[in-house]
Amino acid sequence: MAERQTATYLNERFAAAGLRPLTRFGQNFLIDLNLLELIARSAEMRKTDVILEVGTGMGSLTTFLAKAAGAIVTVEIDDNLAQLSQAELEQFPHVKQLHVDALKNKHTLAPELMDSVRFAMEKLGEESRFMLVANLPYNIATPLISNLLVCDTPPDRMVVTIQKELADRITAAPGSKDYGALTVWVQAQCRPEIVRIMSPQVFWPRPKVDSAILRIDLQPERRAALPDLKFFHETVRALFFHRRKYLRSVVCSGFKGRLDKAQVDAALAAAGYTGGERAEQLHVEQIIGLTEHLRQAVISASES
Ligand SMILES: C[S@@+](CC[C@H](N)C(=O)[O-])C[C@H]1O[C@@H](n2cnc3c(N)ncnc32)[C@H](O)[C@@H]1O
Image 1 (cartoon, rainbow, N blue to C red):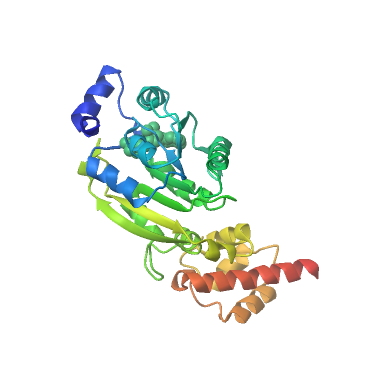
Image 2 (cartoon, rainbow, N blue to C red):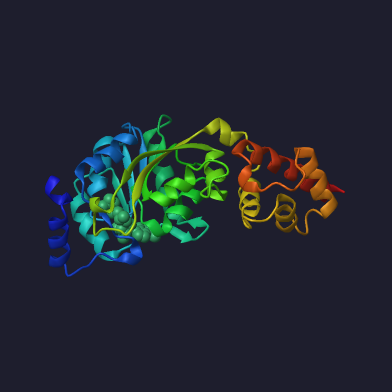
């Protein structure tokens, strides 16, 4: 296993197969064995857990996951890597390989992913939890994390390697430049925590930016307290769509056709705002409260 983690090994293996790592698929492989172990350890997996891995690559992280979890669903878009990793993973009957694009489109996961996860969870029984553990392709990290939180069965935990800049956005505090729709969407239902910052040297080939291992723990009671998840998701995106604009203006444009200006002013006042605030100043609980006032206003407006 250890030899499979070196840049020399990967270089030779790719060259022998006549391949090159593809930038368009975010093919930067972790070559530090300790970090692969850290990712697996941070997930605190049990033998009844189902793990989704997006980006099988050569199957190195998959091997760690297979040793700790009850079932693995690993997804790879690249024909050549899907083939190479198949040989490595054949020894694990509880690893299911899917050879598809993990995203059907920007807002939807490929249906095979959650179908396979649900099937594995049923087999493993009531105790089973679902987690995403992956060294993610950076170009799909945001939609993947975001879309998984829309699912009826969201992951109990995600432990992912992503760009540091994205980890900073997910863990940001109100008022900071990184604080935005993604921060609020994740923090309203989960507790995110940066486990480790990683320099480009721990990857082959080296990416241009720093990376981070991020652990995101679902908080089911917080998620259950959001009465309409879809409405919340859309509202948060609308609130941060024009970062420089004041609350009244972003709410008016986000709710155009559903609330008139007087109704917007009434909803803002009921939530305790003048409209002269900016969304980025409001902490997550305040945005949850404001969204609920807007939801009630939309319901009343549609009934009148
Ligand atoms: C950062 S590499 C990680 C590989 C391996 N897990 C590791 O840790 O070394 C990302 C992997 O995701 C695959 N990938 C990229 N886009 C994908 C997509 N849309 N769906 C599924 N796999 C994808 C790439 O081909 C690549 O193998």
